[in-house]
Length: 183
Image (cartoon, rainbow, N blue to C red; front, side, top):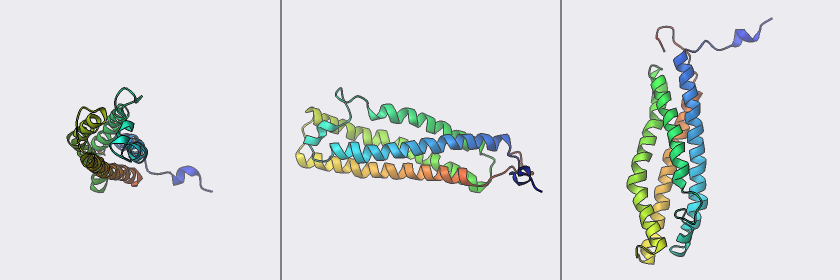
């Protein structure tokens, strides 16, 4: 008769165990971020971009809105950084095929963090300025601005999806400690 211990996986090193913990943080962070960004794009941005400039009254910024989206996404980003960098560092000596999957979320995150302040924050400034009357733009310019936001935000959703899928792939790979290394 066989018992369960005969079918257990080989013992994992502490680095691989730590990497898996960080990967779970990464998967959860990317997953929450993807869901939240899709909601933000489809529901929130869908409302404020529906019929510019009148629909700009629904922009989620300013005193009439209870929470700025950045108040959600910035702390989430902190958890994601912990997960992706922790996984990358603790998985540094893992096999190459795993390290490639560990690098991809880091690259996606860096692109998102470069694009957000350089592309999106200036657009937020313009959108909010138009909504509050501090900036004067033609209706055609405001419609084009809303469309540009939606297109750029779908690009950002794609980057988040790649980060999420890469983290899921990394945590799904069957990796065990190798006898010849100190992994």
